[in-house]
Length: 207
Image 1 (cartoon, rainbow, N blue to C red):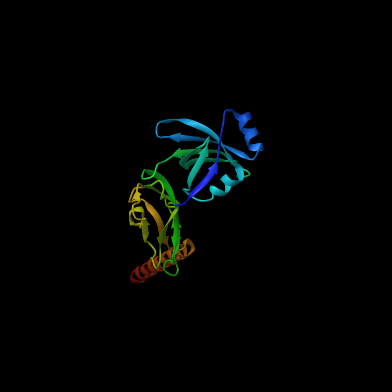
Image 2: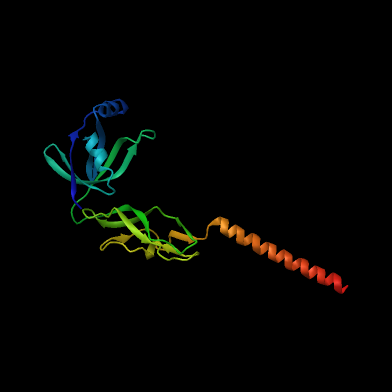
């Protein structure tokens, strides 16, 4: 995974008022923490950070006051309406260190004709080397019949990546469309009703 370089500035002003001033300057307040060190409050370039955050589990090289630190985003706070980034928590990492992250589930392939699939888990929790974090994982449903499901333990992960999610947890389920199931149930109910009516008619005739 290539590093995304961001030039940061040390931040000495805090509070909501200071944060608003930072955002008006097209910058984003952030904090660097981890490895037992005191948190370092910084500002990040707004546009470059917005672009960088489009990549899941991106590895950042943060340059601040003449030093470079490797970090990954652990929490990104966004404006609920505009979607703009308001604050970022960055976790310091080292090469060779393993950390826990969530990766996106991508469903690939087509299930059997006449079936539909439901994604039960949008992400999986895994442990991976900090400088080689996967962004997502493909889960194939090719040819799966109604009633089939894929569990977390059945998902093929990249080499060196360890699953943290419960292996028995459902990730994708395949079933028949509800309308078809309802139609089948109705047909069965009508058939049962017809059978009962025939039986009652036969009993009446015998009597």
